[in-house]
Length: 361
Image (cartoon, rainbow, N blue to C red; front, side, top):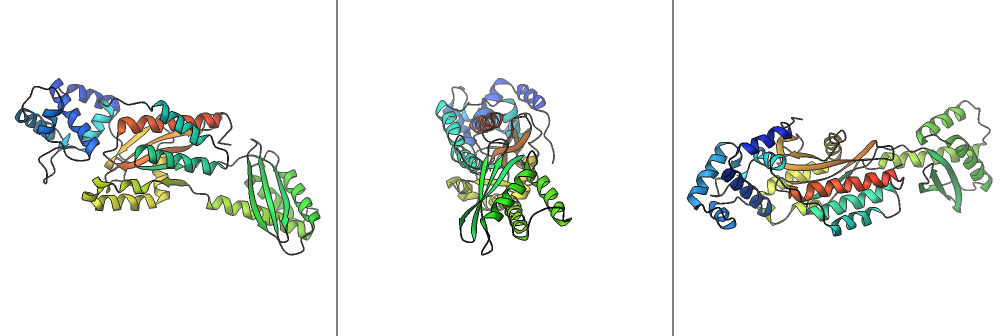
C-alpha cells in the first residue's frame, strides 16, 4: 500500500501557499465536502469577505489546479479537490470539531450495554454509521480468552445448555443437541471433566489437551460423557469459526442524492465492502498506529477504483494491547473535521471499557 508523505511535509506545503491562495483553497475544499459538488468562483466570492472579484478567484483556482490540488470536471465550471488536495487539507489545514457532549454521551451509552462482545461492536459500527452518514466498520478483536468453567445443564429431552464462564467474568451460552436418553449423570461428569481442564487455559489449548487424553484412553469418562465433551467442544469451535472478522453497518448511507450522478463508483464501493476479509486486511494496517489513520482514495489499493476514504483507529484491551479497529468508510467528501475525532473518541471509549474488563477479555 503506497504511503503518503509525512504530515509535517504536507503542513509545510500548506504554509507555502500565500494567505489569499490558502483561504480560497480552504473555501473550495470545505464547500466541496459540504455539498459534494464542485465549487465555483462566484460561490467562493459570496461566502467570504475576500474583497476579490470572481475573475481574480478564478485565477487563483487555476493556479491551484496547476499545482495538482484542485481539478475541474468537464461538466462543471467549478473545482473540486484532488486526492492530493484533500490530503494537504486534512493534514495541513483542517480544524477538527470535537464530538459534542450529546455525541459523546450517545457513544458511551450505546457501548455500555451488557451482552456478548459482538453485540457491543455491532452497536459501535451502527452508531458510527449514524453519526457519520457513511458506513461504519468494526474489526472484531482477535481474542482467545482464558476460561474458568463450562457447565452443561439439561433443558429438555435431547437438548442442553452449555454455559461458558471466562476468567474475566464473561458469560456466554450455547444450546446443544443431545442423543436421546442421555443421563443427567453424564452431563455432570462431562462438565466436571471439562472444567478441570479449562482452568487458566484458552478453549483451543484445553480442547487439544482433552482430545489427546481421550484419544490415548487416559480419561476415565464413559462413552456418553465422552460424546458430550466432543459435542461441547464442537459447538464452541463452530461458533468461533462463524464469528465475523468484520462488522459493517450503514451501506445504505452511501446511496444519497449526491451518489446519483456517480452510481458506478458507489456500486464499486459497496462491492468492495462485501469483501469483508479484504476490508479487514486494510483495517489491519491501522492496528500499528498510535492514533487515527486516514486513507484517501488511491492511498489504499482496495478502494482505489471507488475513490473512497477510510478513517480508522485502533482500540485496546486492559493490558494496552491493540485488539481491533473501528472506523468509517465512505466517499472522499467525508466531513473529516467531524468524523476523525468521532472515530478517535469511539476507539478511546472501547479502550477504556477494555481497561475496565467490561468489553474485551
